[in-house]
Amino acid sequence: MTNLTDIADLTGKISVADAKAGLDLSIFGEKLSGQSGILDLMNDIGEAVALRPDLLALGGGNPAAIPEIQALWRKSAADFLADAASFDKALVCYDAPQGDPAFLDAFARLFAERFGLPITSKNVAVVSGAQLGAFCLLNLLAGRTRDGRRRKILIPASPEYVGYADMGVEPDLFVACPAKITFPNPDNPQIFKYVVDFDAVERAVAENDVAAILVSRPTNPSGNVLRRNELERLDALAERIGAWLIVDSAYGGPFPGIVEDERELDSVFWGRRTILTFSLSKIGLPGLRTGFVVAPEEIVERLAAITAIVGLANGSLGQRIAKPFFETGEILRASREIVRPFYQRRRAAAVELLGDELRRVGVDGRLHASEGAFFLWLWAPELKSGSKTLYRNLKERGVLAIPGDEFFYGLDGAATDGGDGGVKVGATGKVGQSDGGKAERDPIFEAHRRQMLRISFSAAENVVERGFRIIAETLAETVAADARNAR
Ligand SMILES: Cc1ncc(COP(=O)(O)O)c(C=O)c1O
Image 1: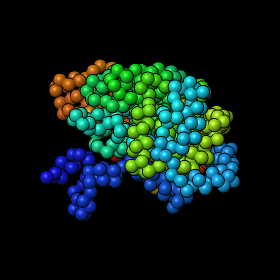
Image 2: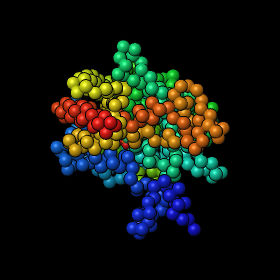
Image 3: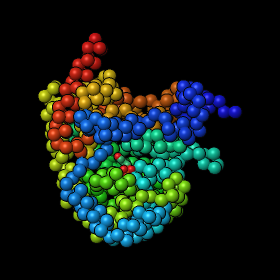
Image 4: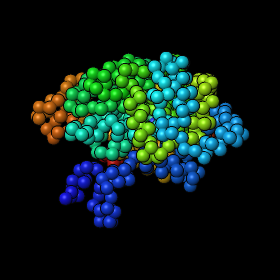
């Protein structure tokens, strides 16, 4: 009989309190219904939207309501509503689990004709949000296999999107490599940028059976946009080890286009082992829960099979409302001419404002180069009590932001180079492992991961302005309290 310790080992989560409460849950149930970073985050968003409109919500991933974009969606929805036959059909019929064939065709044609991707509708799956798409993909590829292997998802440049962290139906799905922190601008040491540490990645693939390499690009939380050569190297590595490279483009090109570099909208990265995921959420439609996976046919067929089991089909409204935009290419125009410039303006204003506020209160704050998505990723090196303390202090003052710790998952057990580029060999003789079997850590990165705050700039400008002021002041007070406590 399985005892509690075995189950705790499998789920990493079960508490004796749960067991005593009589909730005799499955391992799957324990794993997926316990506390998670993404649950806290989504509850915070829900609370801010529904119950506490007074909170300054700079935490969650809601996109801005860009008036021109919302008008386009309203017009498309009105046209759809006016077409009684299509509207009734969409509401009264389930789609096929892979998606509406006409939509899949429009999507594939656009990507093939405009960007030269060698795909047809058989390479596209609609999913009920990119989040669910990632859940299905990660668990499809990684985990225990029939022949007893434990295949992993490799995060090549941690920190990475908190929404993946608890997706594994099985425990320890992730192995992550700390990103290398660089300072790209010699004139501005306050701006840093993560790059992939390929030495660490090579060690991780040598020590783990990696099923897929996973990146969000632009990266949530940092706003990093991995360079094309980094993607090419990761794709080549995936091919070499018989894995996949999953590129989550929820914020990127060619839509919604929340990227600084306009060239990101001109071409779509597609390597020999690449799987792409997309979403309609950040272009103003998170409520419609519509995402897409572009992948080899056999993977798309498997995803459709999962959809049939877990949800029968996807919601049809997102596909119907967006279809004309894919048929005409309007989705690309709207991304380039409306969405990208909107967030560019917001980004520039946010970077300047936060810099000014931090200088005003006299706190050392560094920002990740803001290359995409709509977050500032703040590094406060003087913050000793950790980002969760800062998060709590901010919430007390009516500001929601996201503590950075949760984005650094999967690191235990990953090989690191100790920050000096040299491989550490512990007494166990295993590369990257110290005596206790834990990877040795770069102390700067270890401190760094507890000093981070993710701040959204997608909210209304007056909310951002008030919120940034409170963030700077609260950070200054928290840092001062830390200094007093250290004495
Ligand atoms: C990187 C990333 N991927 C995926 C998602 C989920 O997108 P969707 O709303 O399509 O499920 C998000 C949402 O914030 C995200 O930030």
